[in-house]
Length: 235
Image 1 (cartoon, rainbow, N blue to C red):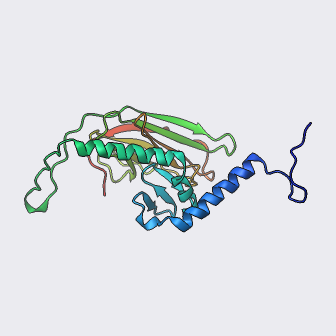
Image 2 (cartoon, rainbow, N blue to C red):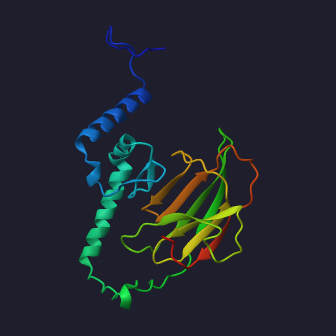
Image 3 (cartoon, helix red, strand yellow):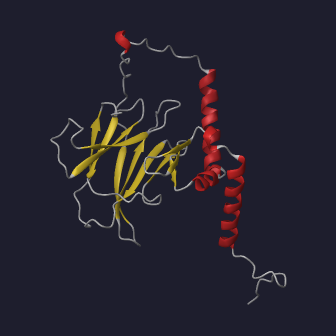
C-alpha cells in the first residue's frame, strides 16, 4: 500500500481531521482579533454561562466557538436570508402601529391564526443511554422579522391544569400563532451543548428543540404531552 510522503524532518502528513481542526483554530484565532463581539447583535450570553447565536438559535461553550460559527456557511446563509427578508419588508408599505392604551398600558395582542403543527419524538442516546425529547413545530405563516422562542414554565405558573410538581411546561411562541405548551417530566436536564440545543430552519420554517435528561435520574419517566395556550409567555 502506498504511503503518503512528507518532507524529511517535517513529521507525518496530517490527517483530514487534524487539518480541519487546525483550520478551525486558525479561523477562531483570527476572528478573536478582528471581530468585536460587543457590536454583534446576535451574540448573547445565557444565564447558564454559555453563548447563543440569536440568528441561528445555536448554543456555544465559549467565545471562540461562537466566532468560528459566524464564519461557517450556515450562519452566513441565515444572515443573507434575514437581510433579504428585511429588504422585502422595507419595500412594502409600513403598517400603522396601534395606539397605546390610556395609562401607558400595552395594546391588545393581535389575533392569532391558530395552533401550529407540532410533534414530540422520544430519544435515546446509544452511547450514554440518556433519554431525551425532540420537539418540532412548523410555522409556515410566521410573521416577517419574527423568530420562534421557548421558555420553561413551572406547574404552578400555569392556570390550565391542576399543578403537579412532577411536571413542568415548555412553552413555544411565534406570532401570529397561538402558543404551544409541551408538558414534560420535571427532571434535571443535561445542559451540554450537544445535549440541549435548538434549531430554526429558515428554508422549511420549522423550529426544533432537543433535550436530554441527566444520567443521575432513573430511566423511567412520565410521558410528555402537548397542550395549546393562547396566553403570552410570562416575562
